[in-house]
Image (cartoon, rainbow, N blue to C red; front, side, top):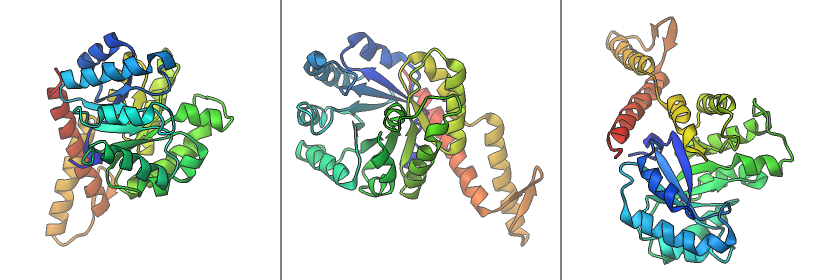
Amino acid sequence: MEYCLKPRRSMLYVPGCNQHYLDRARTLAADCVILDLGDPILVDAKIQSRENVVAAVKQGGYGSREVVVRVNNLDSIWGHDDIKAVANIGADAILFPNIESREDVLKALAYLDEAGGSRMPIMVMIESPIAVLNAKEIASASDRISCMVMATSDLISQLHARVTHERSAILTSLSLVTLAARAYGRCVIDGITSDFKNMHSFEYACRLGRDMGLDGKSLVHPAQIAYCNDAYTPKAGEVDHARLIIKALKEANESGRGTVVVNDKLVEHHHIKAAQRLIKLHEAIIELEEGYI
C-alpha cells in the first residue's frame, strides 16, 4: 500500500515506562501506536522502558494497528542502543526525533541498517525552525521515509510563539512541511494538542489539519482518538460524491467532452485522481478497523 493511503488518522503516543498503557493500547481504536522511549521518559526509566517496549512488540496483539517505536536522539547515550534493541522485533517503523537535515536522515538509516533493519521504513519528526526550513531536503532524502510527524509543541516553544485556538503561529510551518511531504509522496501528521481536556480546541485542530491536507494527528490521550478519527474519516456523502464524479467524467469523456458539471461544480481530470484516492482511503480504513482486536 502507498504510504499516503495507509490510514494514520490517529497516532497515539504510548509511554514505554507504563506497562498498563502498553497493554491498553491493544484495545484502543487508534490507527497507529507510537511506543515511546524518547524525551517524556525519565532518565531513570529509560532502560526499563526499552525492555518493556521490546517485550510488548514481541508479544504482539496490536492487531491491524501500525506499531511504531520512537527512539531517543541519536546523539544521546540511549539512541544507538535503542536502535539495536528494536530494529528486528517486528515493529512497523522506527520514529526518529529531532531530524533537521538530509544528513540526519542518512545517519539514522545507517545506524538502523547496521542494526539489521535495512528493510524497515522510518518516520521523522519535524520539531524545529531549521527542520521546517529544510523539510524539502528531509523529505527527499530517502524513499524509506513513510511519514513526517510534526512536533508542533516543540516548534511553538522554539518560535517563542503562543498557543492559540486558531493555531496562527504554526500554519506556515504546517503548510511548508505538507508541501514537502506531498512533493515526495510522504505521509504527514499533525502534532499533539497537550491540553487534552479541551475537546473544542482539539476538534478544531483536527478539522483544520484535515482541511490543510494532513493525513492525521498525533495524540497524547485516548479520549482524543474518537474526535481525530472522525475528522480524518471520509464521510459517506463524500465517498458517494467521489464515485459520482468518476462515473460522470467517464461518461463525458466517452461522449467527447473533457469536463463535466456535477452538483454545480466543474469536474476535470485532477478531480478524478483525488476522488480515487479518497475511495481507496475509505476502503483502507474499513479494512483497518475490521482488523482491530
